[in-house]
Length: 392
Ligand SMILES: *[C@@H]1O[C@H](CO)[C@@H](O)[C@H](O)[C@H]1NC(C)=O
Image (cartoon, rainbow, N blue to C red; front, side, top):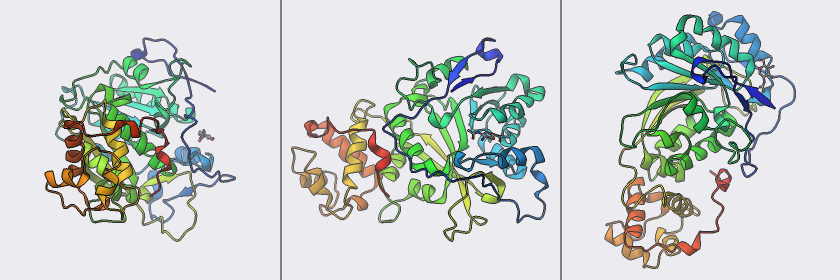
């Protein structure tokens, strides 16, 4: 399948041919195809659903339910999101870009443009490109529309060879240049994470972030993601929350400042995927807009982009059986008696993985690195890509 990017001034007037990226075979999705078209208009319970334009509702209605997409269509919610994302910034002066992925009908895009921001709208479905392009009539110099699937961006290591769009090409074309990690946020990304692939998406960006690869190669990119309530709770969970506290909590709290910007009722969205009618009342369900801003001081002398994968592995293994005492697991990782390490940091010896705070994980890792006490022979063969198999 070959996708063609729209001709735009930033792309030098060239017609770029961008192929759809295929997923790396190692990634496994739990997508169960649903047959037939099923669209739930979350709006049917509202008294005034008039804010959904008929052509947009029609487009979404004609989408296959397996496409698993949500579209923010409520202008009031979109307005609120736009002002939250742009608050305190003079976009006409600052060079910050806003990248909106899976922009769909462009309801949020328009609100973002109204603030004066420069917006790059990425959309994977060609059917929506005319909607987005039409915004150019009013916002010619502020808007770039790119036909591309952000959710799959950089998943294929052979993308360049195969002529597929990767972040490097994208950012080059948009003239977004890398800045030092400690500089201001060079790009804000906003979008709705596909509900079925939420964890895969988040794990992928966990690795990108810790390796400073993909978008993070350009600096401290801020993600503003619409996620489920469950995922939000995971992001912010702390001990002793047994239900939600897990490796992703440790890794994201270590790496980012996390803010909840907004809770938006599902009635503000159109959705193509029918949830299994498992009792959850979707009308009252909320999507959480969470802001993840990488910390300037994430990387240190002892936690670097070169050893950060080891840190991720360590955290994941510690949570393997959450009830086992941490020192038993650490003993697999270090030449040193793990109890001594814990004692050095003033951590109780009998702590379990679920009882240790994110900051303590980082300190522990740094202490082991500092004194060269990590036994690397243990994990050189472990497949680091098999993360989406982590079970909640
Ligand atoms: C793209 O949108 C059109 C129209 O809404 C729909 O018919 C089509 O199935 C969508 N394509 C994908 C890949 O979802």
